[in-house]
Length: 299
Length: 275
Image (cartoon, each protein chain N blue to C red):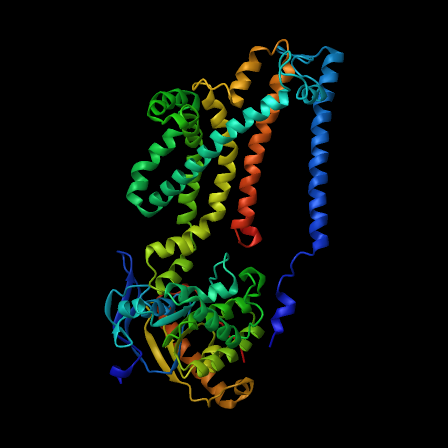
C-alpha cells in the first residue's frame, strides 16, 4: 500500500538542476563584483573630472586608488629589494589566521558551555546575563591592552604574545555563541520535550538527543557572525600586543606610508577581508554537513 | 475489575492555576486490557488533559491514577506506555528509521536489535523503503504513521493517542482508522484515544467515553458493540448510525448544560460530520 509514496514524497534535486543553481550563484557573484568595481571606478572618474568635494574628501589616486593598481601592488616588492607584497601579506595572514582560529575555537567552546549552563540554571541566567551583555559594551580597544597585560605574563613561551591575541579574539567570539546557544536550547518545541518526558529521559539525554540538535541552526547562525569577528579581534589584538608578524602589524606599518604608497594599505585590507570571508565559508561548510533540518529551518 | 485494569482512575480532579479553572472533575474510569477506549467531548472539555494525567505528563490536583498496577509516575519511568500526539512530533534531524529507534536508543538496545525492530515496524505501518527519508519529505499521514511506529517500538502495553488524525483530511483519516484497528489487533495493546470526531470514536472503539463541557466530567459511557474486525462496510451498518446518534445525543446533553448556565459562551465545537 504505497499509495502516498510517489505522490507526496518530495523528489530530490536533479543533478542538472543543482549544476544550474551553482552556475547561477557564480554568475551572480561575478556580476556583483563587476558592478562594485564599476561603481568605485565610476565614482572616482566622476569625482576627478568634476573636482567634486564632499567635505574634506576629494576623489583622487591617493584616496581612491585604481582597483587594478591595488591588485598589481600585491605582485610588486614590498620594499626595495624585498620580497613581493603578496608573500609578506600571505605570511601575515597565516599568522593572524592562527590567532583567530584558536580564538574562535576557544570562544565558541566557552560560548556553548556558557549558553548551556545559562539554559539549565535559570537563576544563573538572571544573575549573570546582564554582566555578559555588559562585557560586550566595553570597546574591544579598551579591553585588548588589559588582556595583554594580564594574560601575557602567564603564558608559556610557545604561546607568548599570539596567545593573548587569541584570547582577545575569543572575547569577540563567545558572546553571540552564548546568546544563541541559550536561545536555541530553550526554544525547543514543548511537545518534543513532552515526548522525551514520556520516555522518562534524563536531562543529559534530553540535552544531547533533543536540545542540542534542535539548537544547531541557532548556534550556526551565531558562529557565522563570530567567524569574521574573530579575525577582526585578532587584527585589533595585535596592536596593543605589539605583534609585527600579523595583518594588524601590516596595517599599522602601511598606514604610516599611506601618503606615498596608498595601494599597499588597500591591498592589506583586501587580504584581511579575504581572510574573514574564508573563516565564514568554513563555518558555512560545517553547517551544511552538520545541520540536517527541513530547508526552512536552515538560515 | 479494578485489580486487572490497565488504567484505573479514582475521583481524579485537575484544576489549573491559583484561580482554579477546573479542567477535570471527579473522573472515575477503568480501562481493561485489550480495550480500545475513546474520549470524546467538545474542545476544552479536558480530554487531552485526562490523557496526559494517565501518562504522568500532567499531575492531577487530587485523586488516584493507577497504570499497570502502579502509580502513573512509576509506569512512566518503567516506559509502560507509548504516546502519539496530534502532530507527529518527529525530530527533523533524524531519518524516519532513527525517529522510530529513538525510544530504543534511550532504552539502550544494541544496534542490531534496533535495526531489526525498526524493519518490523516499517512493515507494520507500511512504510517500507522510507526508512532513510527525512520527516519533512513525507506527507502528514505518513508522518503520523512514523509516529505510531515510534510509539509501538518498545511494545508498550498501553498506547495513548491525542487526536492523532485530527490534522488530516477525511480520506486519509478513514484509511488510517482502518490501519490503526489492524495494528491494534496485531499488537494486542490497550488504547486510549482522544478525538472530537463522533464517527471516528464509534468506528474505532470498544467503548466511547463522552465528556461534558468545562468542568470536564464523564457524561456517559457508550458501549460500542459493533462486530470485529471492522472495515469500510462497518460505516454503512444501521447499528453504526444508531451508535453515532447515541453518542451525539449524549454530547448534546453534556454541552447544553453548560450553555444554559453560561449563555453566549460559544457553541458546541464538536465536528458534526455525517457518515
